[in-house]
Amino acid sequence: MASENHYVVRTDDVRKDLQLGEVTVHAVRGISLHVQPGELLGIIGPSGSGKSTLLGMIGGLDSPTAGRVYIDGQDITDLGERALTRVRNEKIGFVFQFFNLIPTLTAVENVALPIQFARNRKHNPTRRAAELLDLLGLDERMHHRPNQLSGGEQQRVALARALANDPPLLLGDEPTGNLDTFSSEVVMNALRTVQQELGTTVVIVTHNMDIAAQMDRIVSLVDGKIAEDSDVRSSARLAAVKEIRTKRETGELSPFMQSAQ
Ligand SMILES: Nc1ncnc2c1ncn2[C@@H]1O[C@H](COP(=O)(O)OP(=O)(O)OP(=O)(O)O)[C@@H](O)[C@H]1O
Ligand SMILES: [Mg+2]
View 1 (cartoon, rainbow, N blue to C red):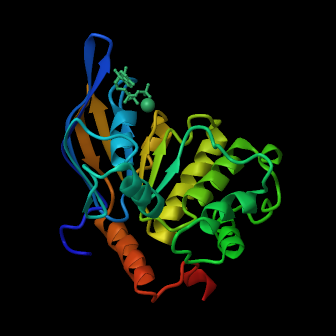
View 2 (spheres, rainbow, N blue to C red):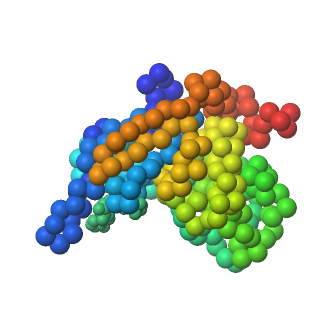
């Protein structure tokens, strides 16, 4: 499936109209977006500009009124609920503003859970969960329950859980929206680690300009359209990340990787 024209996310003139009583709200008004493997992309824009609506369509949580959405080369626009659920489970990890961890389970149990339920289980659940938590700097917090963790730690557990089944794409809607400056920075560093160590493509909506400034590319929305698309990543970094992903897919590199060798 990997080719020159392979995008992890591609939308073609995607639109979403929402009906509010008599009024039709044009939440997303024709967005064509291409995201390459390994990009770390931030979506910014004023409240109501359509960020969450766009992310929902990319994540297969919501279907477009017009236009098409492709994830990892697959057209998901007209898929039914069962097929969409499968795409979401296999291709996409989600993180949100609130962490939604299961309060009675420890960090490692929270992360292991989606691996236990995976159709094609690729990993030993507990071992994989521990590796991911370790990667995100939580090796000392494995057996803590959510209420024994700080906000930034909880969000990193949620991040590890989103990555548990190794999706090519991670989507976040305001993943630092509920965190203080320090914790936001910690989570941002974790996202960078995920991009660089796992080769995951990361697309997040953020209001936090300090976070946005650290992205490789920023797409800003105004009124349901792309107002600006600034691409500041270095092509060398992107090539390196692509190589990691390819090597991992061909089994040449284990997920937990170079430094461990
Ligand atoms: N279920 C809905 N019914 C009607 N209108 C909606 C619905 N959901 C969102 N909208 C409208 O669609 C537009 C885009 O909303 P969206 O939530 O995508 O904005 P956003 O950029 O994520 O804003 P914020 O930064 O406040 O989260 C807004 O005008 C909003 O009022
Ligand atoms: Mg929103």
